[in-house]
Length: 325
Ligand code: SF4
Image (spheres, rainbow, N blue to C red):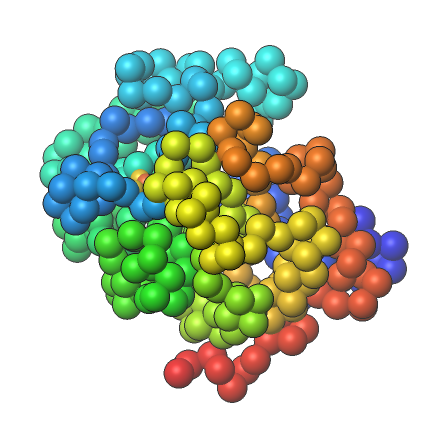
């Protein structure tokens, strides 16, 4: 809690609009996400868009062990609940989080069967569907809106990664920023909450570019946002590129990253809920050294202390003139 007791525009004393506040507002309690693996693949891997995938991609690095397509959706949810319970993490409300690969990359009826199975689990109150911006259609949005009309919580999370087309080409995303923008707008027009995921520190992106990107992000009708620092996973195309062209990369220290986050948070629209600032995958997956912090909570404490020392908070440097351009 902020020692000044100051209440910020989102209604609590945190210096940023937090996901825990958002879920308390939506559900009246803490919410737990249970990752489920749909077994669907990705058009940037199966040849429809590309074959190599995004240069940074290593899905197993960020999928929990209980989430595997070898199990049914129901079994994965049961395992996920047990996984969290063993770690003392209980919750009244749980959302099935279709996380890995592109979870809208299938015919609508196949998707309906997957989502129905998750929602049939008695512990599940809603869905978060993560996907690529080029894997959404009006028919899929109709399906998601249908659940929502029945009172089910639904959110869609798009991997946007960067607002710069030269970066998206360099990391072999197989879509441009305009594609992401179109899908975000189409989804938001259905009143479905939209999340966007960005990576900070992609090759050739300068600090100024990352800060300037916030004006573009502010112009998107997104509800939530996730940031991740660039990590280089072993065995990926990016790992090869990093070894061959180390000068194209700047892997930020914790101090540099916190400074960048301060500038980003201060410029970010105050209604955008920040779900995540960073994450660290287990060290055996990555080439780069870790920061030695104890999880996301410690990063948030360090960030809040920095914001407090500046008397700053989310959106206090929001650039109104750049909102709609
Ligand atoms: S779109 Fe997602 S799953 Fe597909 S290659 Fe890129 S990061 Fe991996």
